Image 1 (cartoon, protein in one colour):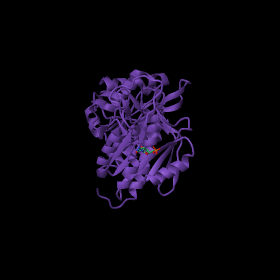
Image 2: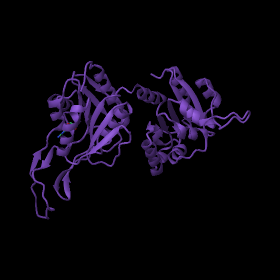
Image 3: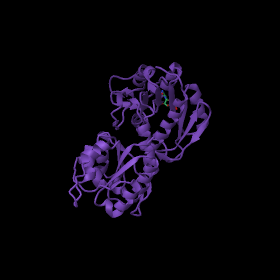
Image 4: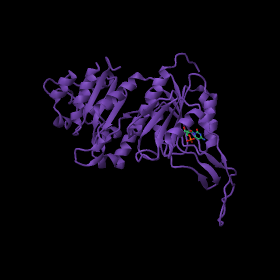
Length: 403
Ligand code: C5P
């Protein structure tokens, strides 16, 4: 999938620069043509000789060759590359990229790049979680850059936390799946976030869902070529990929209406929203006054996944989630069947690294064939990639399908 692809690797000055050697080696092994740009600081962490030898091309660092005046055109590099991967990307370079500063060849090539840009940040945990860095990363995402998130673990500083550059294998897999674009030409519906069920003008019933898992799935499917419609309950998140159209809803009944309308024209639907199961039978027009007690009468909401399961046509893929506290596998299997899903993603509230609001998840995928696949605890973005791979496998089994 990377054969013959022109990959520009930008290395900035952090200790993770040593991992760029493995990255380049893996890309070359996959038959990509690789050129390397290094910043001045990067050259102190790993030698240009190493990178030139591994990439089989001279390393670029300056705007021109001081010996013969030959110009290293960032515009030509930007046009040459099919993908630009900046790994490691230090807090300094991420900040400059977000601000459009262009004081070295790596940054000018970034601004000139016409191709997808992948950014693999690496820094100390305090720098990584500083609002300035988080804001800069968000700015890059809003420009369409693909962020390959740093991993948690032991850092060069001796501290433990998030900031280690993603492993070279992960970066190569991410670039590879981009070029494969396995979902191109397909339409995917993703639901995310909680719903709010109104009691009166100031109160509602809801749950702790942050929407992070659903947004990560929408992002991954879009990165892999799908046209995504994200039906989202209230969250603080914004979808970033240009191929995602967001439809905002508040209540379970609004989400139901949108999904029933959209699903017939979609190839794939992933029901990730934590839809309220009950809604007040009556919504008060005025704020309910203080009193000694209050009894709310609740009615069952429509089960959106189950309703889509009833109208699902051959060739459409419908996936659901199950967040369980007890009897997890049996409950998930029962939901898989009763909702007519193609697979269900089980996460347990008993796992400390799974559930609402946090950035990691531990899942088991149970397929309609009965097969179970167990995964390690991973960042939600990587979990989204695993789910996308499962959809890809299932979709590969569909031979003849037209909407
Ligand atoms: O039954 P439970 O709520 O645990 O089922 C979870 C799955 O069903 C999730 O995929 C969720 O998005 C979906 N669901 C739904 N509509 C509901 C309740 C759940 O689509 N009213």
